[in-house]
Length: 187
Length: 120
Image 1 (tube, helix red, strand yellow):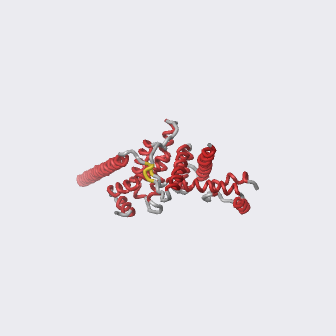
Image 2 (tube, chains in turn brown, red; image 1 turned 180 degrees about the vertical axis):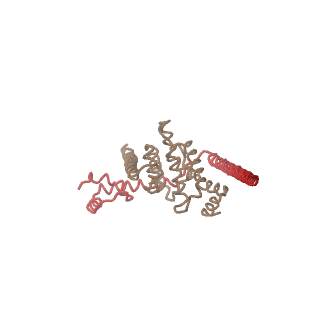
Image 3 (tube, one colour; image 1 turned 90 degrees about the vertical axis):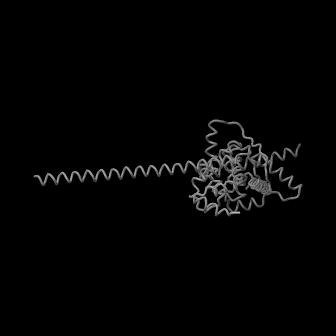
């Protein structure tokens, strides 16, 4: 299997097949990010396609300071932000992912795994229920680990605005996830 | 100091987004409500981190569609570079032609003025 660094070098030299291989290896990851940001499969497909086109046009600017995945996450975040602001002008229906997770890495005992899956489902549902602006920040920071500065850059907001949104998003998630659990126990 | 005074700091404390002074830190470390709240946020962040490796299934055809779009983009790029090359060629030819015409005009003018000098 060809290493990622070699594929990047080849793609930078104009080798489309090498770039196609990068796309094949990263598609599921980027699609998942796009779906979490947009909350909609159709939009996620458009966003991810746009992100790869932009990445192909700009691949010679990738210097390797960050990981390729981080670079692609940033492009995807930017595309999703553009897409969502365009969509906000046209549609306002609530988001509902309705995806089936294809892979979840749990090595725990079955009972613990079941409990964790329950928590995870609850957290995922709470993330989906967030308003898009809050959701974007929490997904990029707490799920994908992007720095505040990168998030601010890609969403076109200030670092302090990104931190305020993150704070609000975490508080909402905390309320949704833990209050829901408390009320479920009380029943 | 009361829990209510520091409650708003807790979501940012879990990953160091918020920094606090020593007095606040000592209070948070000793207050059970703060500790319980911190534990909830830590659990939340662990769960969110796990979402990164919980992939969502795209409908079939998405990858192929993206690869096709890239192929089309590649063809457009090639067409653009050929077009740019042709344009350069045409521009070069035009410039060359203009240079030849200028040189010829200059030669004719020079010859005429020379002839005028000889006859004069």
